[in-house]
Image (cartoon, helix red, strand yellow):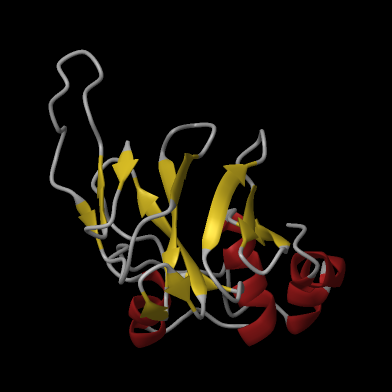
Length: 171
């Protein structure tokens, strides 16, 4: 895999040296680092969300991609002031660590199942189609919460520690 100044990400066939598919596109500036999840189904890319001048960035960003088809997974994640230089997944693929120009290391929860639990705990309903598209782009729409008329708020909140843990970055 390669990322470059032309803002693209390319997957390569190691044996033939040929590009595997169309480039992943969406970054606004140079792609500085890439990291595959341990299962190889997700790719994280580091770039700049607010470029100022060449090699100067006001706000870094991280994008998550589906390796199988190059679709963006969710919205870009921002949190670093300056370029994000380094990305690495934990061994289980639940967290992504980023290091940036701002001398900070951030741990990102990239476990989609925990995102779903957190969303359900916060809004206590399924996402609307508009909300789904806003946050999950081209992912096929589906019910996000296991809700029914028999499901009570008490049952939904019985695992309130999940919400606290998720806010701390733990699913």
